[in-house]
Length: 258
Image 1 (cartoon, rainbow, N blue to C red):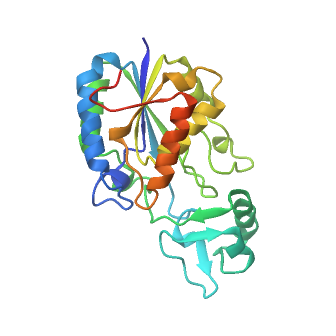
Image 2: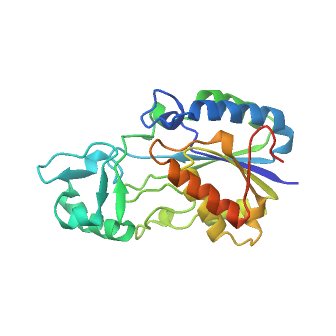
């Protein structure tokens, strides 16, 4: 059986208590996942690690926006298309305003996040206790693939399969067919990472939606004790679990996953 482990965004920004966007419980999640990999290393044929990868100037960050007084919003501010049309918030760079309105019209509502996972910084790096185990695993001459997402400043990119809005003329904001193919070729897909409410949720939902394999939901096993939601978004994570269970995805834990 070809088993693929997909780890979503196991980075310091989310998993270390000092991280810019620490997800409560994520450090313990990754410790459990590290133990799981040690125990089940012989069962894992391939590991895919996604990396949230941003520049500071990004539509998800405060610097992109200003309010009616010319001040940037605080992290976790929610901005809607109504706010944009009313002039309560707009892109700080006038050249970005037309696209920003198009983007907001497409997604409806947008959350401003703290600066996080800036490429080349400590926050972008894989959480050290997990990285140690991954390095041990790949010394067996197994495949360890890193998939970056989020580098285009003009769109949010929770899902590793596609961004929130495709950006014209940027092929990297189209559906990631290469990743989908790798997942389709697996017989079993274990999924862990952060956060259950956002990047895990959107990635797995898109795998189920866009896979060419109608049996893909039954291949997926969510390791629910190796993922946690962003604080305040617990209901979003719970709704994701229920949708996936209804679709045929298996919910399990690291101590008993088949």
